[in-house]
Amino acid sequence: MRKSSDNIDKGFPTHGLQNSDILIIRCLLEASRKLQASMGSRHIECLTTIFIRKDVYDHLVNMTPDRGKESNVNLDWSDIELIKELLLKRFHYQVPELQGTFEEVWRRLFSPHVAGEESFEYLLSRTFLRPRDVLNFVRKCIQVAASRKHTRVKEEDIFVAESQYSVDMLDEMRYEIRDVYPDIPDFALSFLNVEEPFSTDELYLRLMDAGIPETQLEEVKNVLLWFSFLGMHSGETDSYAYKMFYDVSKLEAYTKSKNNSQTLYTIHPAFRKALTL
Image (cartoon, rainbow, N blue to C red; front, side, top):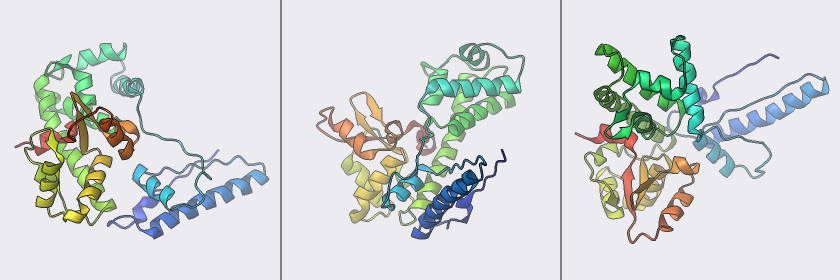
């Protein structure tokens, strides 16, 4: 069976999704159905798979009257054991003689604890459970340790790598928001050294300092919650949209169910180092 692929998003404009972009995707879906039907009539196996970013998919669903015509699978990772398996295979590929369980290999490569927390959990809590984020953070840790001629990644190596990784994550998130919501001013620097958790009033003041008009505050807040830049604080727990399949309404309802007297927000740990002077 022959495989083929392309990146149609390279043709998307750099200033956000337009109706024409959604039309391209809908036409591609229709073309894939016709291709499968044509091949099937000739007894030729043909399977088409279209990978769509979550925010693009949400736009597609909102603008499609006949929803449910296509089957879909969510590729967000929520199983930590799968992430461990991915890392273990990478470790084995790079160093074949490094055998053993994930826990055994990890402890040979990394110090077991960081700031009183298990080191792997520390790294994982600063990602959105996306494989590329985990791999990026782990790679930076190893690079820092290697540059210092350490035979194992130490706690101080992880702190240095975290600062570099945090800047990458913040820049990536800012670019994504700029591309999808070009009318939203760059807000990130308004959250420098913010004390957490913070109230809705504090959040809105910082957004207005960034140049966001009062009429857009609610919309921008929901965007930042969706991208998991912001989370909601309840008791000792911080909750983020990516843990709820990016359902902001569910996130807010979950937090209100905790009977909080005041809505409080927090910044995801992935961005905190980049926003600390």
